[in-house]
Every structure is written in structure tokens, then in C-alpha cells.
Length: 232
View (cartoon, rainbow, N blue to C red):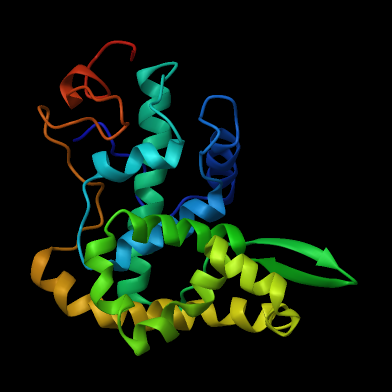
């Protein structure tokens, strides 16, 4: 049993809310993700051409090097992230037709409008961790089409385009509804490469005791979250 194992299965609504509140609390950095951005970020990692180790991407989730109150807090919050990451991964592989991004919503003139900026920004952050890996797809016309809604709402250039072109802004709900299809198309593009490189598992990734701790502290796992004492 690793230090990251939690109750298997998807996070409950209460657990998602707890993780969201923690991400937005003073315990994390100013650049920490919210829960929708995290969902987009983990989706990008799930369908990307290359697998990245948690030590590479976990610090970006928190927005800084974490100073945990206790080992229990570290294991609980990282366990939530790993569980959500694995749920996205297996959901995309096993029931891709039912995939839906985790989005915030707002009420406008009696209608519920999905907010996709945060999710798309998180996805772009995930791509940016392996820009050379994503480049072959990004350099194709097909790739441009698949990524267009995500880059439109997830980059500064895209936001400027939305401001300059009201007709694009009027298509907000259309773009929001297209995200699932975009993700399926991107996954299909990269899946043969990923299958050749990795084996999919439902349990949380194991971390070697001498490997860098995924919390981003810079210490070895055995000296940090894998240890027995209070962290940091």
C-alpha cells in the first residue's frame, strides 16, 4: 500500500467541494488551480502523447512548493487529486461517449451558462508541460480544428480574439458543447502512441521511496510525504 492510496472510485460531491475549497484557501499559492481548471489540466495529461511523472505536474496544481500542516493533510489532498486523475483517465478509456468536463456555471437571464475559461486554461497548462510532445498535432490543420475551442478560451490570444469578434462570443454555448467531442478526437489521435508507452491502472501511481516527492518539495519521497513524521 502506498502513501497515496485512498478509497477507490470517483470523488463524491463533498470531496470535490473539499478539494476545491482547499485549492482556493490560503494553504496554496496564488497560482493554484480551482477544481474546474484542475479537471482540464488532468484531462490534458490523461490524453497527452507522453506520460509525465507526478513530481513534474503536482506542484503546478498547488501553485507553489507546499508546506503541509501534516502528513495526513498531504496524503488526503494528493489522494483526492490522484483519484480524480485516475477517474478521468478510466472514464475516457471505458466510457468516452459520456465524457463531460467539470465546469462552473452561472445564471444569465434565466439560463444556466457553462463557464469554460477555467477548464480550457487548465487544459492548456497541461499541454504546456510537454510542448514538444504536443507539437506534431498542433502543426496540423486537423489539430488546429480539434484544439480551437480550447485555445480560444484557454489562452490570452484566444481571449483577445473573443473580445475582437462578437460573433465568436455569441457561439459560447456551441463551443462549450463541443469540448467533449474535441477531447475524444484528441484522444483518438494520441491513443496509439500512449498504448505503446504505458499500461493503464486504476490504482494511484506508486512513488519510489528515493524518487522526488510529488508534492513538489524537492525532497525524496521517503523524507517527505512517504515518511512517518509531520511534513516540512
